[in-house]
Picture: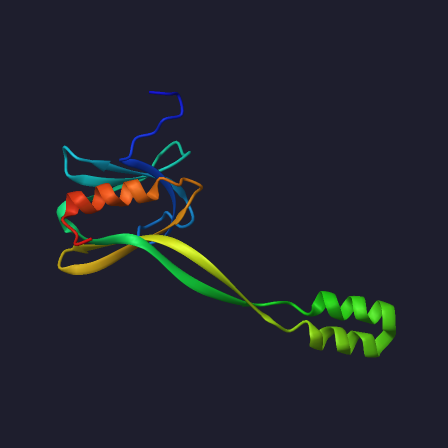
Length: 146
């Protein structure tokens, strides 16, 4: 086993929503097969927050992709047009710069039951590309239909 070898039951993700007080925090997500729990542990803090879910409560896990649309700013083009060609250039620069830019964002989502309520945890990848192995292990332990 090499120095940089990690286990398939551990991964680092960025919390987006679903757990209290961890918005946009890097965290370790660890599957404990013996306790039959998945742990979410805050990274790089002295008083680390830790949350856990029983594997039996997990209904779904997997990658979801959504398209995010952003309107590109026309301010820069208007200023450049104004500097080069005066008022007419500013108007043309502002009009030509209005475009929508779409970007695909992928998230790892876990859906689980808590006190008869369905809840979700949404996480972003943190440069850790072992998500496929991690998700396969989680699905096998939670009896999800693949």
